[in-house]
Length: 382
Length: 136
Image 1 (cartoon, rainbow over the protein chains, first blue to last red):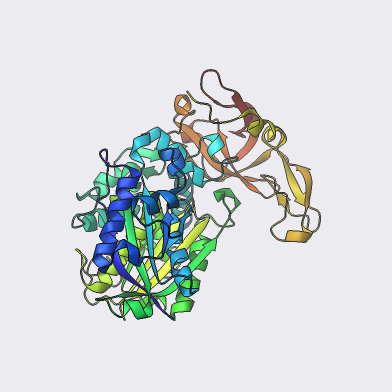
Image 2: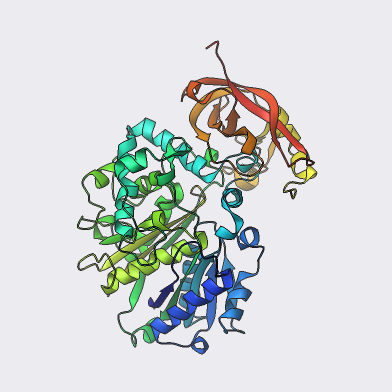
């Protein structure tokens, strides 16, 4: 049996002072239903990815919130949490629920309402993804964890500051055309390399922003999907885990969970890295995109920067990556994994703002914490 | 200000946080710091016993935190490194020296310091920080 994406919807990413978590989640869900040509009564299950509504806005029990405000009670609703990989995790659980035969049409969403808390509160809340006893308790932050990786990588492989800056330069360029992006302006290498330090060596423009937003997808069985326009098929799904704390890893310059999740998705789909036409990778910090190229098999160890220097991952390159601007132009943590799969869906349907010509196979890579959870999904147009 | 941390949450970690007591697998003898109750290599056969670590190691990688979380605002900017202990395990730790003195590969030793304050009337957290070993 095969499973397909048959509808997508997302809110604009940004500071939504006039919209609550429930408003954003419902808006994205309604758009996804409309795009699938369905109504709420057609759906028989709901999954929602959310990292920390409890700390961001004091709301837990997200499955109930989402299903209630979408007018979809009494169908079963489940919240999935794996920090910034919550969206990817919810997608996988929704996919498996259809494969298992329990559901036929499932809504899978992701949402996060981060800006109500303010910047300092958000820094602490996001650290809930790390090790509370041994990382956050000493004042470590997420920029700090990725900075520790960036320093180790730069010193081992000789990556230069201005080479690292090529990640945000590319992604901001891609984001200009994305109508849902929080930021739609170009940045230069000089802008990035001279932006304020947040956690040395990472600077402000290396970091993804604090974002409100929601995204939703309708997944369906093969017989239902065959009746809709341009279904996009799930060809492979991989999920893997690693140590919660960064300091417990054998190697600080790779994410073992990403490698393992990618192997699972490649193996299930029968694809190889060179078969991928377009990719969304988890660029929460600039260094993460370069490490992702290597974990996903797009580049050899230590050679990830070459894809940027040669513009292979830019529009017009051999494997355009983060064609919607990636996390650099919006990172509503629980929604990110869903938003990535929506961009791949648009690419494979030929309707993306930055369209990769003839894209048939796409990959989405979503990471939780400093790499303790990773999900990789491969989708195809036929 | 609301208190985010309870007293027992830190009290029960005193041995590890104050005196670097971690664990050792009773089967394969692998050492763990921070402590683990089960050895990931030996699993069900890998219960652990306490092991006191030598408080010295080397900087494996490092950063300077300039956008601190709540409770650390008055300290910023401050340095954090991943320290490779001489006995093997790696641990994240605050480094007391000026950021421009810290470099990968430099040797460090542990010193007992105040870590953070939980608001004006909350508890004060103590623990080990790391100091460059200038004699090396």
